[in-house]
Image (tube, rainbow, N blue to C red; front, side, top):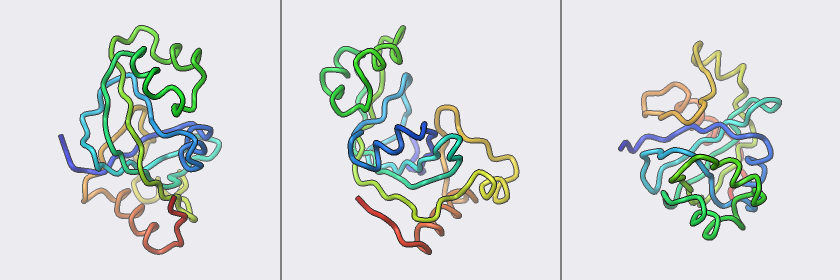
Length: 151
């Protein structure tokens, strides 16, 4: 496991629910091999197409979908049918318990990300952002140089 920050891609609806506090877990069909305390930068898919902020991962739970639903269904941002449709065919899913969120006032657009790193592609699952990553440096600089909306 690495202590690197990570970048995850989310649909606009899910990102909005995280930053509003309605969604308190991020669900994944596969294990992510990260540790508690990892900072997850959030790239929102098109039509937004930008890194919009970050969230701290407080805990990682790898459990069967029925147990995940019992523990986290009410804070998943999904209906029961959406939840079980997402986990269809999976014996063990992952719930990332989310902590403090910080929304950037000036987002890093896909165009800007590709100027920073020519081959940038939003991750399908997630990617690690090691300290020498140009994307991470730009995101951190954006965090420090712009007013933030912490939650």
